[in-house]
Length: 231
Image (cartoon, rainbow, N blue to C red; front, side):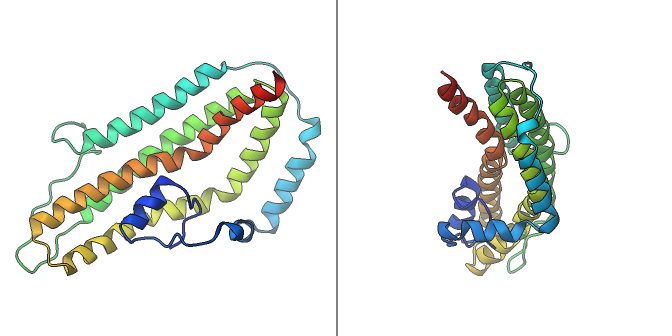
């Protein structure tokens, strides 16, 4: 499967596990992007672009440093949540690595609890990152007219791609299942296979955090660029 963020940490992690095809050339980016946007989306984006000149602006919101701190706090919280969930008793509630008994010789382990664990982390990530993204958009819209226009365009584009992004992230658990079949074909013992599975889970979860945060990171980086232009 080809993921849209060809340079992201998640794609590199999947590639390292031989789970994703990331060989799509950069020069085909426009063609791939065009395939994700249908006619109605194109009309909506065009209308947003045409209305940018009349977009109202009112100075308000948090300062640049507060926005950056919010981003770093959310990223740290997500990373700590993943790391603690792999420590017995480190995470209360549903985000805790399940106990899976090693299979008998020749049998395949039941990794369904691991896949549910991964999906639970994904839901937590999406909730926290979406809330962060909303806060950053509101804050940037009050920093400068240029950033307000950027937020309007970014929000419109995000609405056209949100379903594709969700489908891409939702495919990761299935890729993990394929990875387990590959490891079993290498005749790893049950305990060794589960240990490797846990390592892969942690690696991919940490990589997915950074990938999910890329759009918000782009908005924050725009603050510095805007300050350079206006200074």
